[in-house]
Amino acid sequence: MISRDGRIVLLCGGAVALALWLPCQLTAQWPLNDALSPRLVGLMAAFVPYLWMVHQRRRLVGRLTSVLAVAVVARVALLPVAPTFSDDVYRYSWDGRVVRAGLDPYAHPPTGEALQELRDEAVWPHINNPHLRTIYPPVAQLAFAGFGLLGDGVLPMKLLAVMFDLATAWLLVWMLRRRGRAPAEVALYAWNPLVIAETAMSGHMDPLAWFWLLAAVALLASKARLWQCAAGAALALSAGAKLLAGAVWPFLARRSTAAAWVFPLVLFAVVAPFVVRSGAGMFEGLDTYGRKWAGNAGAFVVIEAAIEVASRPLEPLQWKRDQAASFGARAVVVVVFLGLMAWLWLKRAGPEEAAFAAVAAFVVLSPTVHPWYVAWLAPFIALGRPRAWLLLTVLAPLSYFGIAAWSSAAIWVPFAGLFAWDHLRERRVATP
Image (cartoon, rainbow, N blue to C red; front, side):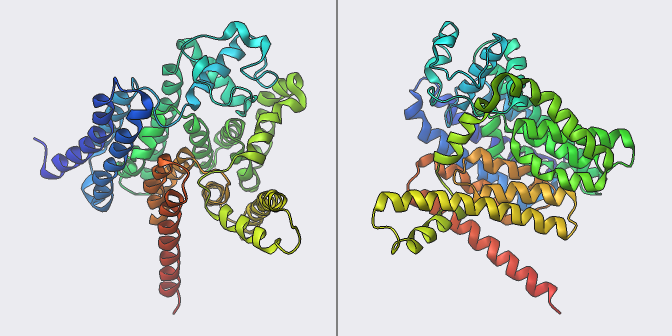
């Protein structure tokens, strides 16, 4: 017989899953533009039972089976749903098709004549920015091509995302047990509505990268040389899927010489064939994204505004001033990011602290902060990171209402306030 706490846990988990699934069912026949608002309302509503369970997580003790069952059911229920909040998954499917055809996704944009025979009605019309070459690194390309063997369309890409998403949950269970914490607290990650929506509904491939990053941190805890080598390989796979993980390599190298050498060897083995074939063109799409894209930024907006104000006396033309401010702000955030990592290195931070700092700094400093970027914080939240980062995952979906100033302010102002409050309180407690 299920205990009272067990029933409450299942009720909360079921409420999270229902809030995500029901609006999708009710709007299944609607045009996606019309379905966006009710599905977004359902996503925000799912945070109510989720946050209540976070507050009452002592009830989770001994409920690991229930937590994981709810996590699986919630994701399976959303797999058939058409991508609503983002159409990136169509680009994944297209890139995988190009790789399987023996062509170079870094050499040809989807509108290129060389790819004309690959076009269809299911994927091709939905690709965003079809005039740009792909921005996704080699490990992601190989994953797109591999999972594309399961079939055409977006479902195989969703399975890719959900597989590594659930693998992350199992990895967190192992890490929580190693730390003497209740493994059922994995619910902080596995029930997070943002994570569920961005993987099972939108099919974003980011779990492929954050799983291998977390695996590198976990494997490095072993003293066995084999597992340390595996940690280096895992970090290389993460960096080959999303470049961010490369910032953690110096911290990994200081812990293990074996991991330090395996990382570049594995990364070279995966990346070199693409570099040889594509050359500098491999980075064209990523370069365009880095220079021109901006939206829902946090600290970047403040830095850009400060540079724009400071440059007013120097440049009479408004458009040149805006252009200079944007370029200058991008340069500043790169310097700040590198400075943070250097400071952590000097204070001898561990790989996990460095990994979290790299992810958090990227989210706060980036000129473009999509909700699925914020979802990178969720695994670290389950490992005990401060509540301000949890709040950020709750507020991030507000950006789907548009890029208006109010939605960005509604995300970043409460986060900054809670972050500052908790930091000041910790300092007061720490001061004799």
